[in-house]
Image (cartoon, rainbow, N blue to C red; front, top):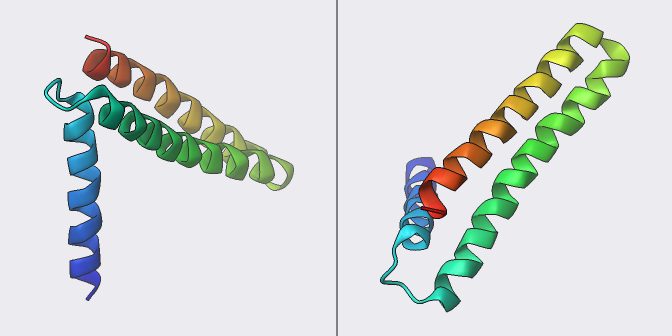
Length: 87
């Protein structure tokens, strides 16, 4: 059952990414898909950043590492988005 759920979500995620890159798909469909992808990825970054800020109070080194990872992932995500969608 776990495999089936994972397969369905993977197909939905990959389909969304591929449809958002295709110029054959109308803009009315592409732009909401891009917004969904950006919101999902922003949520992941936000969770990692929030965890880093919460850990900063208890363990400074681990908090700084998590914040650095979140910022690095954010920069890499922006670069990949610009490469894939804006060209």
